[in-house]
Length: 127
View 1 (cartoon, rainbow, N blue to C red):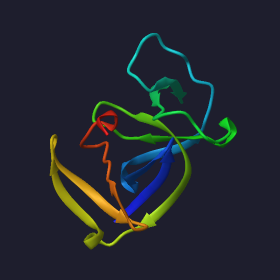
View 2 (view 1 turned 90 degrees about the vertical axis):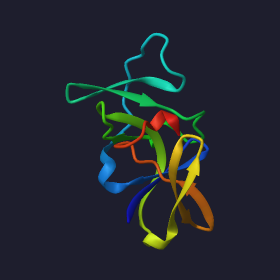
View 3 (view 1 turned 90 degrees about the horizontal axis):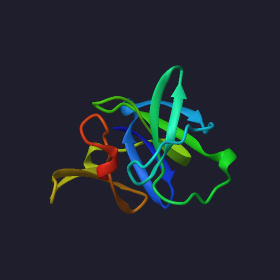
View 4 (view 1 turned 180 degrees about the vertical axis):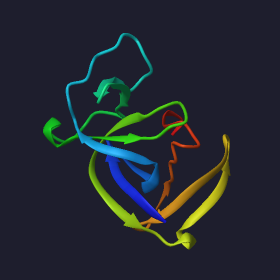
């Protein structure tokens, strides 16, 4: 399985590579009124308004931030990330566990267990 591993604030985000639409440099975001916690603003991506979320305070310079744009069932969603890399994991490293919200996939990577987020099938904000 080919995954994108990125740092989103203080958490590690793992996502299947084929769920990633594109990665863009952080740009000026259009601010919105009261929205969901973590909503940083809207990114104009070639005429499409993409909501961009931040999972906590950034610990890198704003010029080093990227927006990972992922395909979600109701349209694209952006996540502010840094330190991205592509990694390949064996299927044996993926496990499914039943959580409160149903079956959840985890990946053992670098000696730790991380939740696998697939925005095509679950809302990124539920993570």
